Image (cartoon, rainbow, N blue to C red; front, side):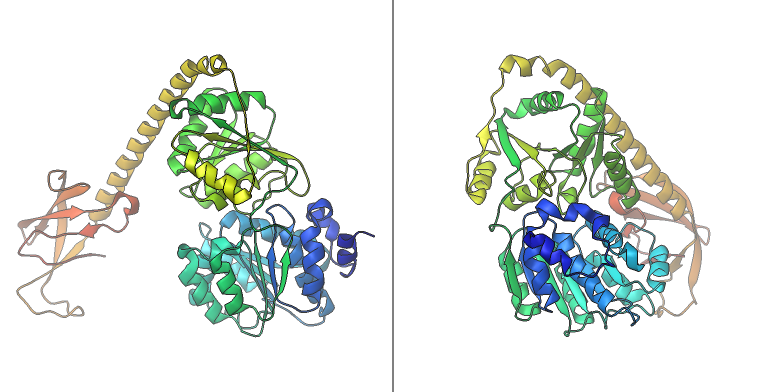
Length: 496
């Protein structure tokens, strides 16, 4: 009997292992190494290649203990932290698939989703809570009756990403809210100094499992690159796509704007492309992912928000349109294909400005990546249709941006027409006093670009006297304008 099968056999038959069969088989090495230690009650620190079945390695032992103690009502039994919303949702889906036979309840707490729905989900007393650090901390702080004081398991998935600066404070605060007498599983595709430091601080005599070298890709992944002039990168991209029209392809770029531009450009060329980035709402991100999973489109253009842990069935090609400056991000990007023993193909488009980053990637992997050659005439013939498609895409983006700015301006002027309160500066008032507070009516709004960027001139009528205020505001947050008064008679404006 194979070692991984023996590990899974230790689990009770109530766990629906077949419900997530892709976690087994060729991807079972990490499970075979980690599960026996977990069943012995040890903390775990596991280093495994992305796509190797890490979720099963921590989910199965947790479900086993739930089964062993099913006579006890175990609400809030385990907490799983993930760096991205999509990965958190995916982990919850896999927990539910594995635990379908035992009526497992799972709650997902991520940003970009209605908080009241999450509060209702918490009220059902789930066994497993899966979330991103920020939203989980929000609920721990604000949701009455929600506590993780009695959890038995804490799982940190993609731990190297969780320890970035953006999550550091939230993670510290969460660790203060959970009991020290717990089991901790720390999983990562890459080992960093911060991960090593965290395991010393949070884990007690952990079992160390390394189902991969420090930084590596799976053997079933074929990796190649094209060295391309920067001005012709789009031509090389179209050449690669035209050779694999039926493939499920993920294209990684550096900026959110690039995802939109490339998606529009490729659609103008007749290709089925969608984009996903951190600037999109959660509903739109999930909508794009679901369309890609359903194969309504076969090209998904994304930033690194989609490079962590997502298991999308059928992705057989990854294109690095922009080479990542952090070499470790390359490992996560190409890990979206060749998952669970399947074959995959990763190709990178390297221009003259990115060559140094690509060399660092090769050094990290400890091997040279093969270079592809192509007839320059095949590339040049694509220049004209790509230029036309890109021009149309840029025009559409510009029109869309202008419409959004006009909408923001309309919303702000509408908001300013509510009644503000102006305090009389000639009196020493406390904030609680109402005496000397005059109602003011907004009567005119003018653009004041001469004063500064994103400035407006607001004219108020106060007790039949017109007062002018210069207001500066960031367009990214129209709901909270930053007020800068230039008037001697009025020191403060607040909005009802």
